[in-house]
Image (cartoon, rainbow over all chains, first blue to last red; front, side):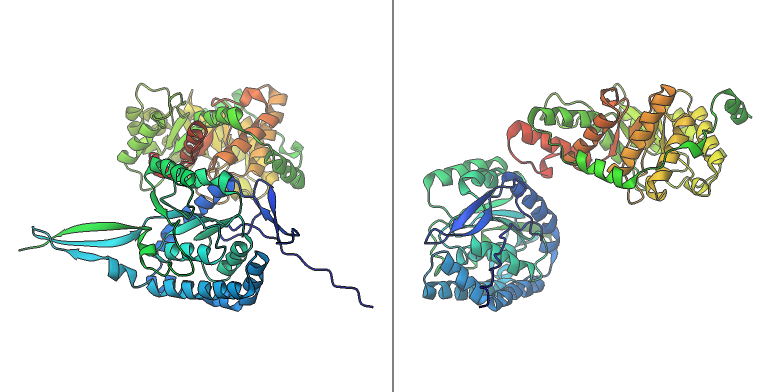
Length: 287
Length: 309
C-alpha cells in the first residue's frame, strides 16, 4: 500500500519592499479553521516591520507616481489576470477562513472585477477631477490631482480579500504607495494576494502587506511622520479617536471607510480621489 | 632637501614582510558577530549622541558652492534645535578652496575644519603639487588634512614612494592633524589594506581613513576591522595611538552603532571619542537625528522635518 503523501504546508510571510521576509520580531500567531485546527502560523508583525515598510514605500513612491497612467493601468490589469489564474486557490482559502462555497466564489470574482474597474480609471480620474477655474484676473488657473504619497491602510477585518483589494487598488492607481495591515481574523488571502502582486510587475515597495495585531499596530500606522494619509475601516469609536488624534501630528489625511459594504459600494472613483492632493496653478496670461 | 632630512630624523619604512596575513573568513565571521549585538533604549541614545559627535559632515562635490558649504556649516552648528542637549559634529570636511568659507561660517565654534588635499580623490599628481595643495589648505585654516595615498604606486609595489610621500605631507601639515585615506576599494584585498595601514601609521598618520567616498565599495565593516586591528597592533608595538575614520556608505544609525560595537571590542574605551574615531558621512547625521527624535517622542520620523545637508 502506497503511503499517504505528506502535505507541504505553505509558510505565510509578510511582504515588504518586494520581498517576503519573516517578521523581524520572530513572533507569530496561529490561524485556526472552524474546527480549531491550526492551518498556518502567521507572522505577528511588529512596529519595526511597519517602519521598514514605510521606508520601502517611501523609496518606491516617486518612481511609481512618475509611471505613466497607461502603465499603472496595465499593471493593475495584470494583477487581475494573475488573480484570475489563481482563482481556485483563493476560493479555497476564503473557505478555510469560514466563507461558504458560493460566497467565496463571489468574493474572488468581485475582487478580480474590482481590479479591472480601477485599472480602467487610471487614465481617466485626472480628467474627471481636474478643473480649469474661472478667476477674476489675468491668469489661467487650473487644478490637477497629485498623489498624496505614502498611505497606511488598516484593511477591513470582515472582508479578507475583497476589502483588502478595494482599499489597495484606488490608492495605488493614483500613484500612491501603501503599507497595509491585513485582516486579523482572515489573514491568509492577504499573504496569497501579496504573491499575486509579486508576480504582476508591481514594483517592489509599492504595496507592502503586514499581518499582525490591530491593537498593537494601529497607533504606529496613525502616528508615523513619514505617512501622508491613513485609511481605516473600523467602526469602533475608540479606534477612530486614536487614529484621528495621532494622525493630527503631521496632518495626515484621514479616511474612514467604516460603513462600506465591500460587495456593493466600493466601485467608486471617489475612492481614488480620497488619497489625492489638489494642486492649483496660477499662470499669468496677457489680456 | 627637507624630505631627506626628515627621513633621517625619524620615520623609517617598516619591514612589510613581517605583517601577518589576514584571515578573511575569520574577519567575516567576526564582523557578523558585531551585527548581532542589540543596543537599545538608554544605551542606544548614548550611542547615537556619540555617533553625532564623531561625524565629519562632508561635502566633496564638483558642484559645491560657497552657499552649500555655509549651509553645511550651519547644519554642523545647529543639528536639530528642536531636540536640546545634542552634541555638535566633530568637523566639516570640504575641498581646499572651500576651507576659508567654512572657517568664516564656523567662527567662534569648536568644530574642526577638515580639508581633503593631495590631488583628492585620485592622488594622481606630482609630490610638489600635492604638497602645495596641502600647504594651501593649511594656510586657509584647515585644522585637519585628509590626504590620499598613491594607490597606483602602492599596487605596483613602490612602497618606499608611498611612504616618503606620506612623510612629506605630514611635514607640510605641521601641527595640523593628518588623516591618510587608503581608498580600500581600490586596494583589492584585506592583506593590502593591512599593509597600507601599517605603512601609513609608520609614516606618521594621525588617523587612517578607509575611503574617499568616490569609489565603490567605500567603507565596509571588514576593512574597518582589519584597520582597527592594525591600529591595535601598532599601539602595542610603539605605544602610539592612531585614530580611525571609516568614510562613505555608512548612512544608517544601526550600521553606525555596529561600527561602535566593533570599535569598542577591538580597541576599547580609550578610542571611543571624537578625538580617535570619526565617521565620514553626510546622510548619516539626519538618520541619527531621526532615531533620537523617535526615542524622545515615541513617533517614527520623516526626513521632511529635518534640515537637508
